[in-house]
Amino acid sequence: MNWYKVLQGKVKFKELLKDHTTFRIGGPAKFFIEPQDIDDLRLLLNSVKRYKIPILVIGAGSNILISDKGLDAVVLRLNSLHFKRISFRNNYLEVGSGAMLSQIVLSAQKHSLSGAEFLVGIPGTVGGALVMNAGIPDRNIGDLVENVTIMDYNGNVKTLNKKDIKFDYRVSSLSKYIILSACIKLVRRNKEEIKDKLNRYLNYRKVTQDLSFPSAGCIFKNPAGYSAGRLIDLCGLKGKRIGDACVSLKHANFILNLKRAKAGDVFRLMNLIRKEVKNKFHITLKPEIKIWR
Ligand code: EPU
Image (tube, rainbow, N blue to C red):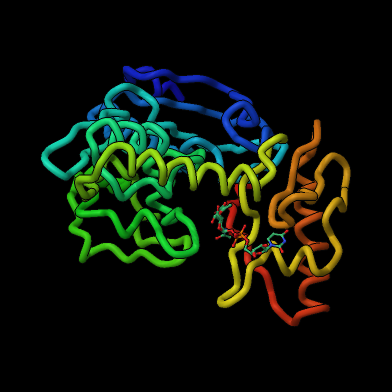
């Protein structure tokens, strides 16, 4: 199984995924690969095909819980310079899927372009954010998209217009592809005005969310008309702990990794939360985070 030898990018074996997730949880990936560019990515897909190994794309690892056993898979990270390019054309921003959201927000501010401020403080890549339509309650990244360039798992590249992409609350039709880049439409505004907005969004996060321990952000989606955090809070579960996994005292939809939490601790805590919320409110919480096991 020497298929990876043809690749130009970085190839690692048994890479510990906890070093690539914001939760700091996750066992080893059989292969961990950072393709150099689009051709290298296509070569990888073609070479690995006959071995039937699952291929999983990890972004900034911010919305994911990975088993401690690790994964018998190829985990892909689009982290080379090629996948992190950012360029501007009038009010449009062309951005590689591996770029961090914080980078695009700050670059947009430098160019006096507004509209993406609500993404500040979300520790994700553009690709990851697009796949799950990341955002805040009244704004999602999908609202900004003009088009998205993808590669399918046979190596074909295609640019999808916004009208051909379905974005919904924390899901999109892009999940069946590997996202390469996106074109985002912004509006021209004064830099000071943009700075004020950025500060307001950042401050709201600082005040309401627990950023002092590793976590995966909000664990559950908000059920229509409710805040999952408020429901969990009303069940009295703040501070509830299993192993080193603990419900945040500040925001009950955050589970914190206090030190050496196992994926199993988090699963058990999630099950307990779901059970209590179901018993008290007859509402079934659905995970927002992706679970790889
Ligand atoms: N609340 C409580 N107790 C808690 C948490 C919240 O009573 O423990 C109450 C708050 O006081 C507020 C309401 O619930 O009245 C809503 O809380 P918040 O404004 O924090 O918003 P949220 O619905 O819990 C959503 C997103 C967050 C995003 C914030 C920013 C989801 C599941 N969550 O949280 O996204 O950062 O809005 O406005 O959509 C994420 O996706 O990972 C995430 C953290």
